[in-house]
Image 1: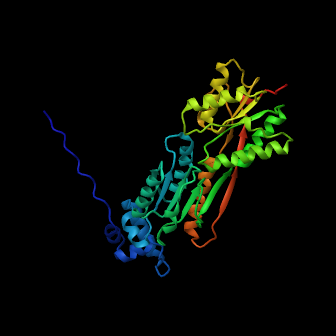
Image 2: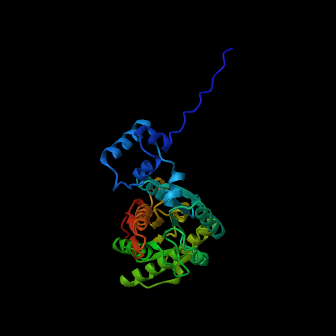
Image 3: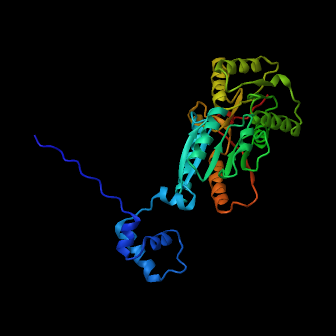
Length: 351
């Protein structure tokens, strides 16, 4: 029986090999790699570049980090990795970072303890920057105020800061998105518009309730407490069913329902259909987030989309700018939430 011989891996090309091929010192090659070429003769630089190309030399990132104090790594902390919503941002953050010469180190943090552990890990790894992709939970982020002066720049997305922090920030306009949804419904003949509000532990719930009340006022509609029910998307789906049934028991019942998120909206659709109501002819339904499954519901779900992809793009661009200009003033960006109209709200309502 023949035996398979294991091929010995090729020896890694070193900076010393490049120096020997180019006929220069290791220091001269190091100067060329780090763009210190002001006093270098052009023929010398050309020989080094040709040697690098012919030997297929790739500088060691570990060795370079010792010289530049940079690791070419960016940390990304995601609060809700179990849902596809936030992961959409990763597909845009990672290519932009890679094209700029950075790798992305991904951490999941479902609670404050996980987040603190992730931050400590990223500091130990000496990442060049950190992006937080957070929920809007009210959490005590006092530990962030104690970060060392050597900590890398930080960009936060959708985070509710409970302490003043001089970070670059990106938020989305929950108030404006809710106003757009209510305005659309009014334009389609609805005057009895209900809100299934999210948990009080999130800033987004407060902002959407504010947008709901402001929109009703703008259109001359009275605010009715009976049309506002809690649908905590962190709780059991059965509680969302009960909240929908409470709305239907109001006299007169609402003709449109704004749900606290798209998963709650899917349960609302099913609850309405099970009691024999048509969507959107009898009751229009609008969700929040624009989860990928919205187009697969029956009917397809109208929703207030959060700008997660744009937020991811802006965050990595802000971080790269911050790395190039460390002393520029911090920036705060508010991105609009767009109403995405689909079948669940398209019919006009005639009372």
